[in-house]
Structure formats: C-alpha cells, structure tokens
Length: 107
Image (cartoon, rainbow, N blue to C red; front, side, top):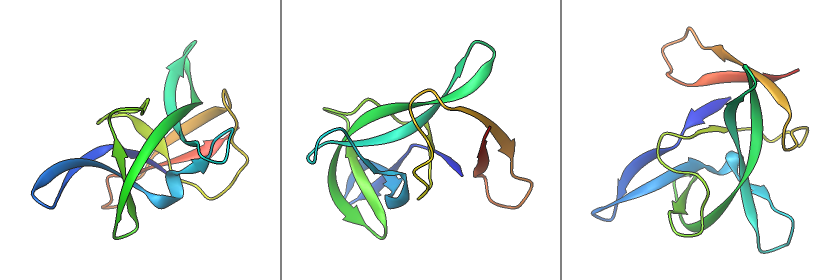
C-alpha cells in the first residue's frame, strides 16, 4: 500500500505522521528509513529515504522535518514485507474502494 505523507495536528501543533509499518531499519541500528515511490525513466521505483522520528500517536510515528528526506506529499510504501530494496520497480494501482490509499505491487 502507498500513502501520501500527511500533516496532522498533535498537541496543538502540525506534525508529519506515517504509519508505523512504513518505517524500516536503516543501515545502522540508530538509522530509520522509508521507501518513497518516485518516477524514473518512465516508471515508478522505490527509493530509500532517511527519516528522523519523534513521538508515536495511535500507530503513527511523527517524522521530523530536520534530518528527514521525505516531506508532506511524498508517496511512501507501507508494508511489513522486506522484499523492497532501493531502486525496486513498482506499479502503483489505483484503489477503487472508498479509501484514498493506493496499492503497490513489486514487479
């Protein structure tokens, strides 16, 4: 599934929130990352992006803008599968249900 990074309100301030399932271990134990869907050479691929994290709110994690390579509006893959790697081609499929989320499928 792919979600757009969105800004939500927590404790009377705007924060960037992502589902916990979008967060993956980075190259070191204290580094975290997400897979962002980007268009390259006429297709979509995922690219590993570093994220700096803060508080947890109802299964969503606050992403700090300082130290993070994603921003509001970025499309981030939400999956518990570890099959993705940087540069993996994906196909984003529009979800026809009432949910605005999109599904993604690895080629």
